[in-house]
Length: 303
Ligand code: HEM
Ligand SMILES: CC(C)=CCC/C(C)=C/CC/C(C)=C/COP(=O)(O)OP(=O)(O)O
Image 1 (cartoon, rainbow, N blue to C red):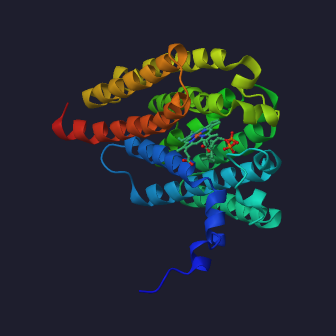
Image 2 (image 1 turned 30 degrees about the vertical axis):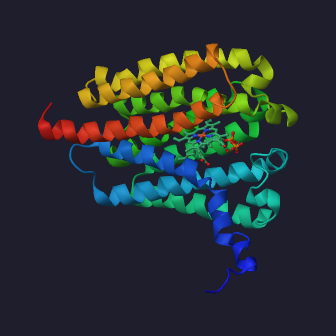
Image 3 (image 1 turned 30 degrees about the horizontal axis):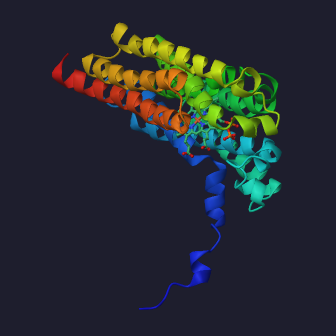
């Protein structure tokens, strides 16, 4: 048997992989999943396949473009934080010109796809979302106020609403509930991580809440937002948008999230904030999976 070639084992990541990383793929995948669930919930039965495919692709392209623009704007901050210093624009594996061209290509093709093959309202709202994240949050809010991620969270919360509009051409109250769930989820999602990364944000002068108001205050805010989140996640059931399957599942997920937040507040220990952050991602996937499953199972069994 031939021994592994050391040159191959330590080969640098391909350029394709670097472009892929520029899109923050794992975040974008969850964002697109929430948009897809919005599409399924918007209609009885199955969504119209043309609008579904082009809508998903268009939203994914625009979200990826927004993530790439965020890395273009933030390259100097990213270079000085351990968590982000391996990003393609920091290591030099992609140049500014390449990154700008790539982000433009994704953004323009995503917009054109949504405008021409889905509907103009979806295209315009998705474009505002891109500007909200890449422009308003990254360029301004992130550097200006500890409420940066609360206000900026509106961009991350928009995708299920965009998915809904892609299917129906209009903004429905149920779509606003989906928006509200992600909007209220964002602070505990991010501040759990920021507690752990406080010193890095302080070093680069980014006024994240644990930097400006301290870790204890941030833990209190995480707990308060998690309580509020529990209330907001009951809204799909309260408005008859979802049924019992959703309610039981969501209350279990909420109970675990609350337990994390309570432990972080009164029984903090090293590693707990990162576990809470990790759970926040499982939680959001869980909530949107429950919404989807409930939508079809309730229709099938007629409850
Ligand atoms: C303003 C809003 C948000 C902020 C400030 C934020 C912040 C962050 C940060 C800093 C990370 C990186 C953690 C790391 O590198 O270890 C992260 C990871 C993540 N976020 Fe968020 N986030 C936001 C909204 C969202 C939204 C809306 C979603 C999805 C619906 C999302 C899904 C994720 C996922 C899946 C990861 C894990 C990525 C990985 O494993 O590489 N985030 N978030
Ligand atoms: C449909 C559409 C256009 C959606 C765009 C929404 C979008 C891409 C949201 C991403 C949220 C996010 C990862 C924020 C963290 O940015 P950060 O700069 O605080 O985190 P970082 O330090 O890891 O870069």
